[in-house]
Structures are given as structure tokens and as C-alpha cells.
Length: 277
Length: 316
Image (cartoon, rainbow over all chains, first blue to last red; front, side, top):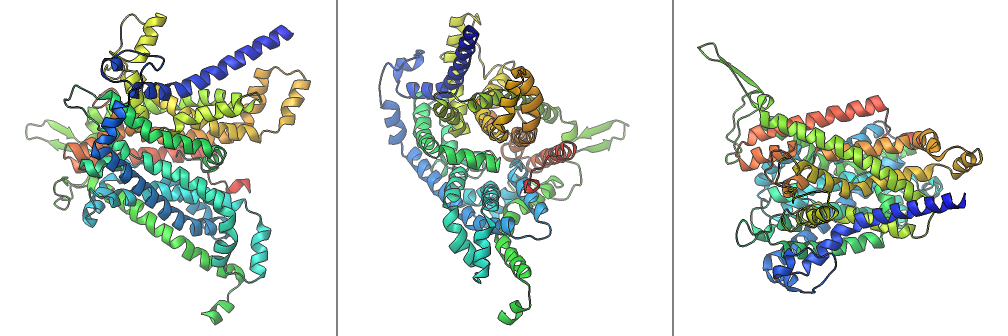
């Protein structure tokens, strides 16, 4: 009996090790590669042998990549602030007020967040051209509303639905208007939810590729994913793997740190939203 | 205004406030979602060019299917619906979506069951599986492109050392393996998301049920299929539909990992290619409209047949 138990335990921990190795290895290998230059790059090294900052220097030394990081920070931050601003009031209405067609409206919002983005690409392209914001950050800020806004509304609605009714009733008895209820009663309680939702929306905007690829035409206006996706070497055949890995590590490490810090909250937000961040 | 409000009941007042709270969001969504969608559908019925967005004329459904009978009696069919490249993309997308979601569900279930057990280092494992999820898709595409590199890639090296292959495989370039490469990366990247959604469902299952089953000496496998699976079915159904929708619209991974490969080109990729790269703006718009229609039909069927409650209203 105990032998069998031991065996089960060993099998279980073996499975755990496999899961962890599979999850972590590709990023680990990217880090190892990012520190290799020259011929070292083209040897398969399972363990870090050299620590050469050359790739990092070449990526950060070129002006365009730093520029891309700033573009991405600006676009993602603005998008998130805008989405949260609109979503707080909207989700209050959806979570706390009974009105006809509420379920339908929620389904519509969910439908928009699940939209194939390609279906609006032609129309958005026209809109971007019409507004004269092609090849500017505002093209991305505007188009990212399509997935950040429904997502934030949806998650905040589920969070707000769970807040106890008593708090609101007390405020209503005191004669508080809905606006006062939101800003003075709910907002202080919602901070954790706002941080989580904001972070998830930020990651979504940070990672977006299709719109950023289509609505930019010069290297200086690219966002990080487009810059990495289109990073090319001196010639067509020569793919600069070292710098690509260095760039990948640079933009991923902050994300991973953020995700690990906010782990629990992110898991809660993800499962409430059920939407891929 | 104040006297007016006095005549309204509290719930009417609240409903009025709700309307004004919702209006800005609805306006924003109309502006960036509904209007562009309508314009895309309109463009698909014209012969608009990328270089001249306002010069298009209405041509009906010719971008989808046009039938012309020549004087000689020969019938010529044109349009997306008879375009082999389009049907290839449809097939690629559907195959990708079903295979990736299947594996993500099975592996996600396994990971979720592991995380639901109590053991030392559980927090560490959960942190580890969040890493693939946190890495931007483009970055994971590049990372894997490097690992799958035919000459210097570590995957070929591992497989050669293990004796599983005799010669190096050009994973992303070869027509036979490009789809496997895309599937591999997508499954790696998205299984964590699936696992977390399933885990949330698993944690709703009361522990006493398992203990009762254990006392009765029920086989663990039977417990899984007879107790756990039926209880997490709603969570599973929602997770699967979300993943499915995401898989059907896949663009970035395919575009970066296997550029210009006919073996992996999906509906989103081919639509954008026609729209932006080939200056067949209206033709691409027609293809993206078709993708939208396919997804809309699929979702309606899934919700209708599976009686899936997505709004969460039923839980109250």
C-alpha cells in the first residue's frame, strides 16, 4: 500500500516538474540566447556560458527600439485610463440598476470583445485615414478601445455585482445620488478591481499586433510588438536572433514581474472576465 | 429639474441615471466597433481600392461570387467563394482552432487538476504557468521561431540527441510541419489560460463530495468522470467558447512564426493580405465579412445548443 502511494507521489511530482519546465524553458532559453553573440550564438547551449551585453547594447543603442517602448507605454496607458473612465459608470449601471434589456446589452458588450478584429479593419482603416491620424499613436489608442472597453466593463460589472447591497441601500436612504454612490461609496471599494482590470487591459494593449501593424508605416511610430516582429538584419537572410531575443527579454521581464506581483488578483480578474488578456 | 425628479419614483430616477452612465460607453463602442463593421460590410459590396478609398462603386455580391456567361456559352465563376486560396485559409483556420482548443482543454484540465491538489510548491507552479500567458504573442512567436530554427534550433538538437529524428527538420519553413509549429506555440501559450479558467471551476466543487467518494472507495478515475467533469461542465463550456473564438480569429502568431506559408495562412491573415498588401481592399473586406459571419453563426449555435450562460445573470 505504502509503496503504491510512494509511486503515485513520484508520478505526481514528475508531472509537476514537467509542467514547470515546459512553462519556463522557452523564456529561459531566450535569456540564454540574448547573452550570446558571434559564433557562440550558433552553438546550442543548455546552460548560460557567456554573459555578453552586446545584444542589449545594440538594441537599446539603436534609437528606434527605445522609441517603440515609449510609443507602447503611451498608447497602452492612455487606452487603459480612457477605458476605465468610461467603464466605471457603465458597469455601475449594468451591475446595480435593473432595466429592460440589461442582459441583452451585456451580451452585446461581450460580443464586441470577442469580435474578430479583422472584421472592423477595413472600416477602421477608413476612419483612421478620415481623421488624419494614420501613423500616429492616436490611431492605436482609438482602435484599442474596441477590446479594452468591453473587457473592463465586463470585469468591473462582475466585481460590482458582488458588492453587498446594504452599502448602497444605506447611501440611498441618506439621499445619495447615483453619481455620489459611485464616486464616494463604490470607487474606494473598487480600487483593487480597478488595478487588476487596468493591468489586464494594459497587457492586452501592450501586446496588440494587427492594428499596430496596419496603422503605422514608419519605424519611429511602431509599437513594441511590431518592432520585434519586423526587426531585420543587414540582409534578408540574416535574421538578428541575438538582438531579437534581447528585445524580447527587455519587454517581457517587466510584464512577468507585474504578473507575478499581482498573481492572485490577475487570476481572479481573468476568471471573472473569462477573456484572454 | 428638481420638481420633475420629485415626480419620478426612485427606480425611475436610477434608470434615468443608468442611461446617462451607459451613453458614453455605448457611443464609444458604436464609433469604434459598430460603425467600422458596417463600413467593412459596405466596402465588401464595392470595388474600392486601398489607394482610393472613396472611389469605389457598388458592385453587389461580385466580391463573393460573380457568375458571367460568355457568348461562347462558357460560364465563368469568380469571387472569394470559388477562390481556392480562401478555402485553404478556411480549412487551415478550422483545423487550427479545433486541434489547438482540444489539446488546450485536455492539457488545461490536467494542469488544473494538479493545481487543485494540495502539495508543497503549489504557488510556485501557478507562478510558472503564468509565464507563458504573460509573454506577448509576438515575443513567443520569435522565441519559438528561434528554438525551432532548422540549423541552430534547440528543439532539433534535443530530438536528435534523443534519437527521435535522424535529420534536422525545418519546422516553420516546411509545408508539412508549419502547422505543427503554430499549434505547438499556441498550445504552449494558451494552456495556462485554460487551466486557470478550469481551476476556478474546480474550486467551486465542494471538497466534501470528494471525501464522501473516497470513503465509499470510488475509483479516482470514476470520480473524475462521474462527479468532477459534470460539475465543472458550465465553466468548461465557457472556457472552450472563449478559446474557440480566439483561435478562429488568430492572426499575429501565424503572421510572425510562418510568414507567407500557404500551409498555415488563416482567414484573418489572408483577409489582411488582400486588403493591405495586394491592394484588393474590397476583396479583403469581403473575406473579413465572411469570417465575421462564420464566427457569429458558430457562437449562436454553440450558445443555443449548449445552453451556455455567458452573461452570469443566471448565477444570481
